[in-house]
Structures are given as structure tokens and as C-alpha cells.
Length: 171
Image 1: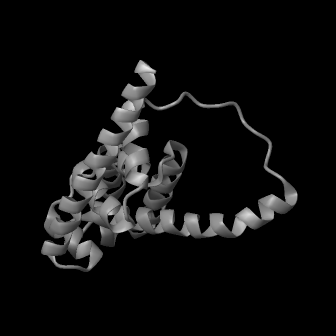
Image 2: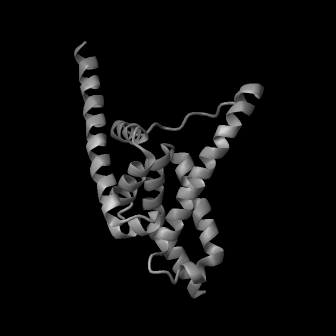
């Protein structure tokens, strides 16, 4: 019972942040929610071990990132199949995300994957640089460089998008 209560509390506290992190990484809220749910589903049977880690959130997040990459790889192989068989029937559209979220996700999608992952993990996931370095298997200086370069590039992309939008309003 104690394990179940601890896991339920862990899920309640960590789920929203991990979904936000995966949304920024994948660009899809539905995919982010599915990935995070799957990561927690994988954590539950291992909870006695995972719950004893210094940073169990890092374990769940790493599983989520790996699931996202696996989905991208599968999607590539499905593209050929979809072109042969046509697209699936469309569902009713969900409410769109806010303008700022769309701009941020669009900007993040144009960054190199390592920079995007570092930015999302640190700024959205709240990961300390040392933990990101540990999970990524690189030096802390490498993460600092990825964050610095990623922030610079993202700022430039967001500024360019804002300038484009401003030109559209004045045209």
C-alpha cells in the first residue's frame, strides 16, 4: 500500500511537468500525454527500485525521451505505408494551443536535437545542469554550451517570427 500511495503522489506531482516537457520536445500535446503515460506505466512495475533512486523523475523522463525517439523512428517507416494506403480518417480538431506556445514549439523544432532537449529539460522540466549531464552522458560544460547556444538561436528564431508577424500586421 505504501508503494502505491508513494507512486500515486509521484505521478500527481510529476505528470504535468513531464507532459509540458514532452510537448515542447515533440510539438504535440496528445503525443506528449501518451508518452508520459507510457513512461509512468513502465515505472510502476519497477517502482520499488525506481522509487529508491535519488532522482526517480529523471528515470521516467529518460524513458519518455526514448519513447519519443522510438515514435519518430516508427513514424518514418509509416510514411511510406500511408502514401500507399492514404491517410487515416480525420478526427474532430482539438482546441489549438496559444500563440506563444505555438511560436515556442516552432522555434524549438528548428534547433538541433541536443540543444532542444537541454533547453526543454532545464527550462521546462526544471532539471539541474548536473542531472542533465548525467542523463546525457556528457560533461556539465557541454550542457552549459548547449543551453547557451540553444537560447541564442531560439531567441533569434522567436525575434524573426515576431518581426514576420509584425510585417503581416502592417502589410
